[in-house]
Length: 165
Image (cartoon, rainbow, N blue to C red; front, side, top):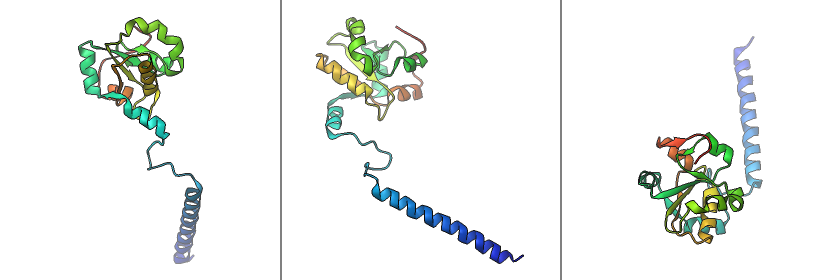
């Protein structure tokens, strides 16, 4: 058995597989629409402008509002995710149920009290959409918590599990 021929055969086969993969990758990439920079989400320009007009609040500042009891937190994720864990004391108004659930919590939301919405963090627009709906109802002190639920968890801040308040 000639080991040189065996290694040469393995090398040539491997090189051929890589070459074919490279050519297919370039071909597929060339026909796919450009989605922007790798790892970035591509939102419509009108939505980006809406997000830009939103007031945001950092996890640290949100926690300061939490400890001073100067804000109402709204978890905009679905009710199953809310029950799995949420900011302690937050109310749950899922975006897709906003019109239905808002009247139940309207008495907790005053026009001058800070309202902080959150969802799944970066890339999640649920909290932005609920904040937009609240602003349309005349609330002016509405903030979207940057980092969302994952940021709150990572900072090891107070959480609750189950249905509340």
